[in-house]
Length: 459
Image (cartoon, rainbow, N blue to C red; front, side, top):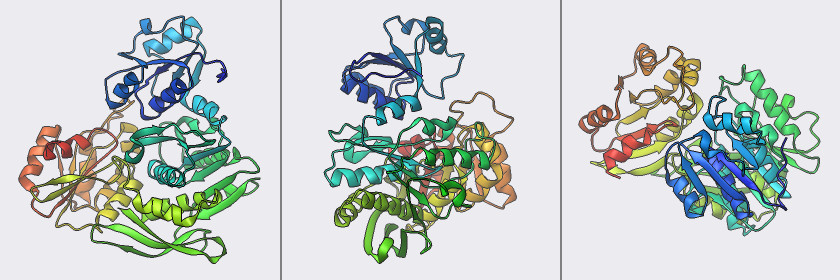
């Protein structure tokens, strides 16, 4: 593997530089004096931010973008071998790194490196931890997979030895990291275009846990099935969090205010407890906060400081994000694209004031839709009324013979009121006609479904 020499900055080219993680890594290297450039298919707010910092971004991925002056090229898993820049890099013999390998090499520069993993909740939990670290004046460097308002984006460049990032399991990317403290939020079936089955996924998370050094710490959801398979024999310290007293950290007395925001008493090791209030809904966010508080305790951050940081935390873009109100209809946007995430978001919505709960869902990738077709229908049936958009293909080109109409058929079989429209315009016109004062509308999915709510709101 090519090794970055951080004492002698070189020329690094990012194929797919506009991605949420790639753009952060590009800025970290540019800040360290590296000559950074890269390519992206389309212009975005993230690429505009890169160019404002003097980073050269090519729009369109072409072989001629790859020059002999490049010392190393960085790729994401979304870049396939038929990509013209991928081909040109290999024809020229330019050294390559994956996004995960580069992130791992960057992490080695930080004595306190924190990696947040799990099938769901990584971005929100990483953001909660970031809020705590900033509030505690630890001056961390932060790379988060969403737009965190308090740091003005997806990256914060700090001046200390503290680094926090998300650790994605897809293509085993997180096995290239070097964390001192690791968090495992949950382990469920997902990314079945890469993993064989749940056991394959569990095996990767076990390998992730084994990355932690003897003086490190694993914070893990104590309700993960067959937990000892993941933790037995680890040399690092292990702390658990979960919904009950079987775990080291657990909540009681959970309540919700008129906006659905959660408050609870958090119990920790040794019998101590503290009251935590969030500006976020749902029991899933209560557990995310429990994990973040456990991390704060590991770093000996005063619990009053941690609790205040969580009380001020307003969430992340596209994570149960309030977008506005139009005609008395409240519009929420959520990134949920897995059945468990949909279940959690719609359960949280039940605690918010509403007459009718509408869910506009855009399935994400054909492989995930096919693998979880029945489970998607079961989760979506928690809404009063469902509107389906076409599947967002993302990195995939093979439809696998699956479509949103197949998901509608599953929902119809459950007796769920469901509608399907092939265009956003049709969906928006339907909602304008059907939604009434007092309804709650959630746009949901990891693609561009958020545009529907934004168009209705005129933003």
